[in-house]
Length: 511
Image (cartoon, rainbow, N blue to C red; front, side, top):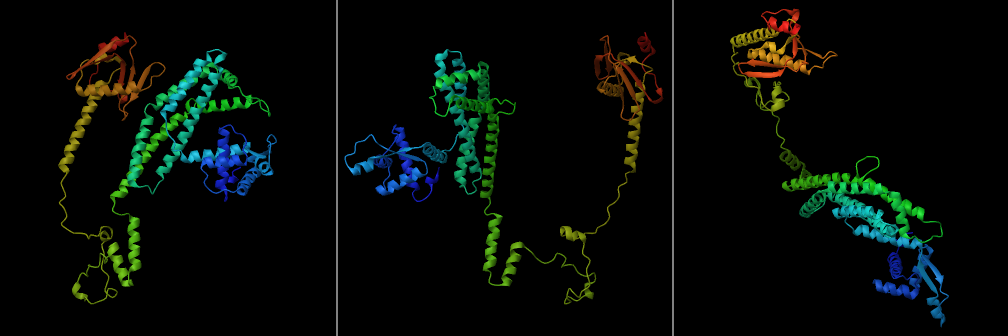
């Protein structure tokens, strides 16, 4: 179908097909030899074209089934030359129309740049709202439903094609290694601003389209397509009824619309994926610009430095010059241990070769850091006996205070929290810790919560009050009010060194 685009006569073949396309736009279905020549002249074909060459071009297109040739029996011919020139009429076949449309579409894609247009989203939403209104009108609105549906599909196709083209151009821009930094900076700034403007209210516009799609489907998409089919007024076809194919095409287009804004399977709409692509593109553009700025800040790259050094080596006159160049370029010098001497230098003459001289001990620190050890007086060891004694006394005092506080909280059975009354701040702090542990534990079937301290020395059982009473615990620093829980605090063996809450509280619980 596209063999006419290659070869020596590709330009003439393309011009002839363009001539038939232009004639079709003027409703001329067939052209003779003179008509083709006139159309070529109108289209701007300036080359000399003999009749034989034009005949060969038309015969080639007929051979490829791009043109159809018929005899014109309706004309009256006065001479044989007139019959020869006007008898044959050429017209485009279906393959020719498809080939011409394909070439034109390819040229349009090459010339297009793509765009992210928020106006298209608003147009899609408007057409959906218009379909909702037309679905409630009588049968006279079928033609308007058809035109509105086609406009909706056209806007969706424009959105998809422009988005694909723009994304392709953007990726090619990111891969452009030889782009001029100044030009890329300008393009980057404009592209980032363009993407940011597109992202403004993109979620709101996408949500509005999704809501409009749902409203149309509530009115019945199948009924809408049937009414649009009646409004399309399709002509009869020799191969069968075109209605089935037309409806299937509309169904596929509607499925594509749902995939973009309201997917059936609950997945992310493509409009949200477009949101992510735009954000990633902004980040990528900024990263590419940062790399360009970084390369501009350096006077030269490492690759260029090594290439220049290789040129110097190639231009060196001799091997000695190469060695000197190597030493200067990479900074290699004598070994760091070459300055070390024998413990008794007088025994070894300075003229003795290193291969004959006895070995010298080399420090391991010299290998790792380039420095030798320095031996000085040993530092005085600090006497920490007093510090250890003070720390031991402080730790012993803290343990005694903690044990005293815990023993002061021990109870003989469950008591009300209010029975503790006024508490020392240290005892109050330990009580709060125990209450916190108990409240964080999960209650059993009876509602009791049990917790044990980390060292296993104290166990507390707590039951929240059922009567809603409030307990007030007082210290020198203030008072704390809370639920008057039943608590039971025990130590190992149940022994208490000092009295806990009074017997009156236990009698109150027992009562």
